[in-house]
Length: 466
Image (cartoon, rainbow, N blue to C red; front, top):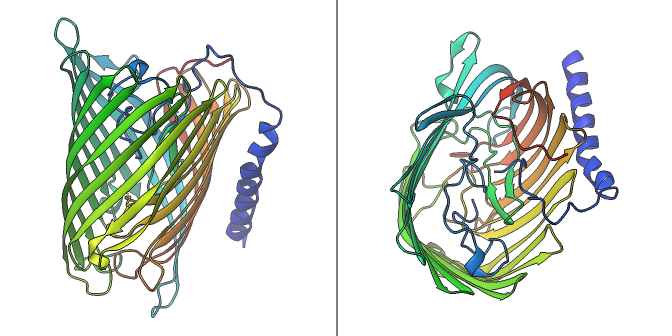
């Protein structure tokens, strides 16, 4: 009874804090035009470079070009290495979190189950960063973010989530830049995630999705790519990114079920400035995917050629409003050449005391499980800096994957985080999150998760925005 009342209170607090941004927005004004609206803001895959259609709508000649993005982020890797630096090597963050998790499973044909889990998470962000050459025209960046979970006094092998990335950027000449990248992620059977569903780069208007599904089996995802970015003219930029991906997943309830995907293809993006505040462009992505699947009822059943084509428009409104729109087609050959609507829309705003963003995308995307179907996904994220020490972060997300005659997997997620600065580098953190998902009963389970967290996080001092 006490536990249930506690969860009810947490849900009431979560609902109230998710409504608070609307009230706070009406009382805030824009920051000065000289202020960087992205500095000190939390961040979190839509574009992988700053040259795609979601980039800041300014003339191509003034765009930032390719850069190494922070893991699970749309923003560049921060330049502040902090005090824990030894030559090329630095530790960018250390966190200790205590998780209180209630997992309810409701798979058809099986009795409902409920389980309460408590775990301790230790995580850090390790970076190797170095510029080569007399003019620093080559940049090497290696990032690794391991997580260690302890359950009932023992290290849990079912929750050892890992992410890593390598970026090597070459400035070949004043117009041409090349970047070789690799992104690796490992999601264990039991996942603990209470962060923001969407990371936003408010200075450029780009976003990156974070995966929130709980335990659809073990999933490995690795993508290697090479991006060529060319400044065709002072107003036009072109980028081409060939890539290769490997994905592997086991069953949510039966680890003998196995699904493997090998895909190769590329993305072409062209962006042209119409004015200092407006851009128009196009992007095309084509991937041939080969699947090996032990299940005959869930997951892709045949090889596919996945395509997404979008005409994009971007606009900067005032000092810190960013608007992006896209419309086109998406197709998948393993459904008989079926073609559907592809679309994207996003708006972000950075106030002096608040950041706010909404993003929608329809097309082929990765949401933490392997699929060949197109997906609709919408995210909302809001950050409020109540005082120089106290900040809250809210996010809501929903996705639905096409499944032919029947709806495919879907998921809803809501989270609320708070951070109170104890010192310039050490913060007390807490939060609550709720996940509800409908799976395919093989690789993705059906049920809901309620989660609460409390802990400490250390990061190098961020830029003060007051």
